[in-house]
Image (cartoon, rainbow, N blue to C red):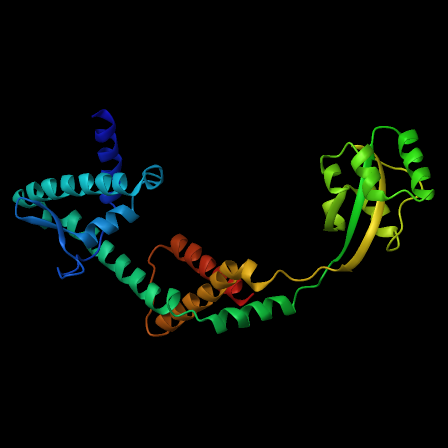
Length: 289
């Protein structure tokens, strides 16, 4: 019982944040509950579920529905009492309602003209633009064998000179956690490793290994360079969400610029006007980059 009350209490907080018009009832939006004469539509319940506190959002679906419905019932009950007291005519309430109406209209406009207006071609074009200005870094692919002492490292180099396989020696002698992979470090740029290691690795020729031990804070390394290349850009599939955000930002800024051309913004407080102008200037500069 206590758990149910807790869920209802947390759900209530989320439900109170909801705003916007209720959709008309139809076959796809049935009544899921009634509180006296007041109906709760499926669309309202869906909104409540989507606005649940993160800790409740992890619950199984039926528990989420129950928590959201519990909060909605509480809202309907108290809303009815509020109307009886005439709170809908309160000046502060009307101001808040007007603000919420404007905010939801803004969000609906944003959804239609920004979120839903982004096309795959626009995302691909923005990706190509970003990739074109990237200066690729050099990266190498290497293996290493890490041991505690310089003598151990020298002994390993001697075995390599005698023809022993590097990956096999790494599995046998390295103390690094990647020993089971034959000391494989994959591709990395110079700034990814400690300076001593990077200097030695990037100085090697492809297919060569260090002929003297490389000391670092971790111990003594023997390094084999397997490949060198310019770092390729990340594939579009990997960064598509971030690129889409850039496209959405550009669309939003364009909408605002168009809206501002037909309107004037007057701010009576000099300090607030200065802060507003500076914020908008910074936003414009950011959008130009």
